[in-house]
Length: 418
Image (spheres, rainbow, N blue to C red):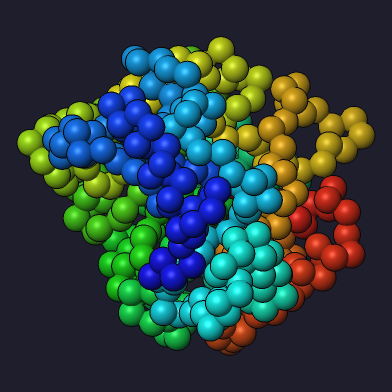
């Protein structure tokens, strides 16, 4: 399925092999920053033997990211990274033909496969003007109910920009309408997120099992303020990634952010999941390579600023994963109180790439144009009466029109979650 891989030239596999052979003992891992599908990497036999231990660190990713217990220079700035032209490095595409629902657009174009810059331009242009049959990522809201009531909960519900949410929970008929035209085991990724906490939906685990028959992966975002039976259900339903909104590294910060005194509860729930999730290899607990991936998250704002560094180091050391989110990127209104920290702005190119590859479905089945339209005021239709394929086609063309005619400051072109 790597039909466009580059072998020769300064950005191809030959260059990676040559770099490794210059100093095999030192260059145990060699790679480029080419988009996925354009170039491989070299992993020495010795390093591969170390990775065969099948611990949480037994993967390429942990070798490249910051590890608080073992600081190192950024690998991207070292000889292990073979430098390639910036036109290739900045490409925001994936050139792998592994999705039957969305066949590759470069097959039969040998001239494209011989020139990585032209290939990237072709894939980017095709994603803008010729949408895939289905989105690659669906953000599915199952409920608007939430346990917490603090600053974080208010932010997730629009930070006072929207009225009271009265949408009903998504029903099974609505989910069936979404899945009806999806092929079995498609390349689709589904994130269960939205105004509410998906774990509060009464049929959450049945829904996840249904989605798993069609999707490549299911990502569930939750506050994890649940009982032991729900924890057990998380591990039994087959969810792949579990994002947990912890939002603090101290109990008093948690109280402010979540509006309840349950910091210990969420930590104990995470501890239970780590101890009981499915693992691979002999390692146990946090040292094991296990599923689901557990990803603690914290929102970067004035109230959490003192917790961010210790939060990030603690969870990267414990699980190898931690996410720092920004508040919803609404424009500030005159006289409106807002967070004093300078916002982390997602580059417009990245926003465009994401918006042309994913869609949000609210719990009532409506599909909003903007990810910040939490009330669903401007939609392209409803899954109850229109096929997912048609909704995606309309949404893509609507967003493409906004991209071509609006400025980057347009709220409709911002991401609710990067």
